[in-house]
Image (tube, rainbow, N blue to C red; front, side, top):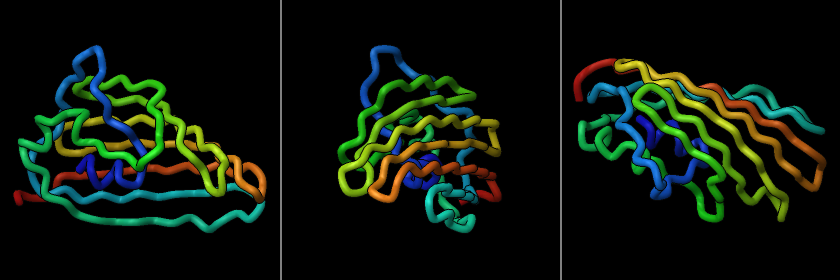
Length: 141
């Protein structure tokens, strides 16, 4: 589940000094829905993406290391407990600009919710993006 949700979010998992807890999630088939809104010089219509993924106990046991990120991003902060993950990150933006992101996820056993906001410097001017994520366990794998 985290891989699919966070593939959309550029989150970086690095070994941290403090050991993070394992997310409060149940293994099984998860359905994800991500809704993204972009505001800027040329406002884009809201976009929604849905997917499903089989999440194993091994995936969950990997905790924060389950998260993968695009190349070039720098994790500024990450705090993960069994029920929540909060982070801030910097990534390269379009055509040499920068993107600053803040996000959080809440893990509730058979469902998860999260949001991420980012500010981007682009050649067209500043743009803001907001993403809402909702996931739910729907069955066994």
